[in-house]
Image 1 (cartoon, helix red, strand yellow):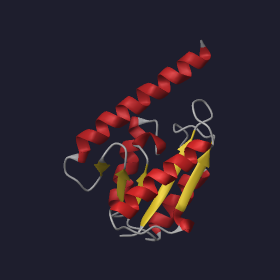
Image 2 (cartoon, one colour):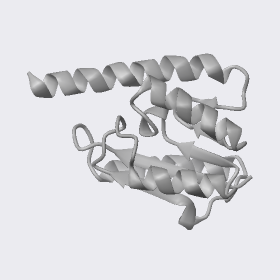
Image 3 (tube, one colour):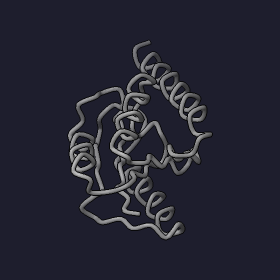
Image 4 (cartoon, helix red, strand yellow):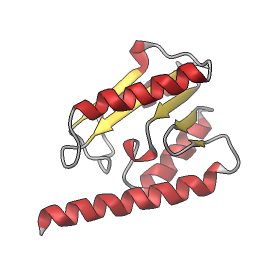
Amino acid sequence: MRVAIYARYSSENQSAKSIDDQIRVCKRYIKDNSLTAEEKHIYVDEAISGSIVNRPALQALEKAMENKEFDAVAVDDLSRLSRSNHQMLTMVLKFNYHQVKIISVSDGIITDDENSKLGIQIFSTFSTKSAFLVSWSILT
């Protein structure tokens, strides 16, 4: 199975070094599960909130997905893809439509697993709440 990697950090809580950590976690998972990944399919958005829909690397990932350049996308955790519950569920449906799995390594979620639906709901809800609390603490 061909796997792309998506990594993102937001300027609020993370540093650019977290990108390397996220990629390392995904590459380890890919290697441990005898999957393949090409460097050209590592997509990185730096200092961009997960609540933003139009992120350059995410858009490039989606275009490559539509061109069937990979079979799955690995992320360190679901919050790297989105901090919005609605956006996350929309992304899962879009990826499913294109028959591309989402592998959330740290969350232990693979979207083609029938038990993943509840996990996606729970993790994306907590990600949304975390993003709200971080934003609120910055404003106050």
